[in-house]
Amino acid sequence: MRPSLPQLRALVKPAQLALLDAATNEAATSGVSLWLVGGAVRDLALGRPVHDLDLALPVEVAPFAAAVITRLGAGATGEDESRFGTASVRFEDARLDLARLRTERYVSPGALPEVAFVSRVEDDLGRRDFSVNAMALGLAGAEADVLIDPSGGLTDLVARRLRVLHARLFEDDATRLWRGARTAAVFDLEPDEATARLIADGTRYLDTISGDRITAELKFTARRGRAGRTLALAHAWGVLRGTHRALRLDTSSARALQHRTGPIVFEVFMAVLLAPLPERAAVLERLAAPRVVATTVEQTARLVEAGAGAATPEVLEGLAGATEDARTAARWLDPERQPALQRDLGRWERTRPVLGAEELMRLGVPKGPALGVILGRLRRARYLGTLGTRAEARRAVRESAAHEGTAESHD
Picture (cartoon, rainbow, N blue to C red):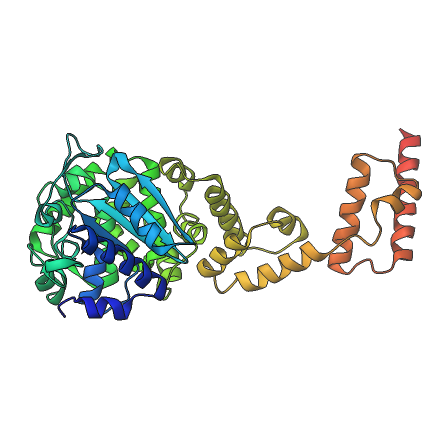
């Protein structure tokens, strides 16, 4: 359907509507053109709720954002990135992003763009990635409710077609391959012939992208929804392998994500993707992944490996302390064996020795390694059910001490 202002007002949350009203009223008062751009217009065309409010205008954004905050009053806050021509306003649980109309020029693959500010929204739309993301809806003044669609984005949405805006799209910025996979996955789009060729060629530019930028794309993939479908496309398009030669979508990962269409906790998502891979450490290094992600991935891998064997106390001790994110990822990857293993792990973590350290010392066990060894034996015995009462435990400790004392005297 054709996006419209009444539809926009009906599909946003109350806090988003308050932000839009403040921005629209400020634009009308100051005589500034104001456009809703990007994914929000695409979502309106599909009748979907609007998540991201991205607005574009032809003037400096910092004074405009400050005026919007003043209109909203208490509870409104903002961030200003004047050097990039952007600003944001937050109100309650909603956010509004403002950007000055611009064109971009990339001097080399993967480099940050050189920006030139412009006055026409059509010029700004021309710098964007895919036709379905290159539409604008006027918000104020004579342009209110005017749809600008210079690249035929509405037609492509109807045709379920993913189409690039220019041939250098992926050469300029290969992270757009990830955005293309997400867009195609979420909206059930298929690349046209020319776009498919550019995707295949564009993967060679992924090595120009830093690890933290790739990780940022993976974070957005996890929270955007349909992450499994996105990864399947990234795998089929060669985007995973282009990111790192050992990165791929394992069958267990694909199965784990198949029916999970909503947002996923990032650490769980990364563990599901990477834990089955033998060279996961190298991939994590390439991605410059945060330590919490690397820890979750390794804990998940150990849990899945342990599920194939016997859950002995020695094995469970090595798994103790695994985070809940790691346990969730392991259950997704290994739904048949993990429930039993994790029940055993939980019972092991709750098991305490029948006798504590202080009582053992009163029985003559000295501080040091021997104390830890005996505590470990008592915990293991209690878990296995081979030593029940405190009296039995004290007797076993005395006998052990007597035996060790005898052995020392023979030495």
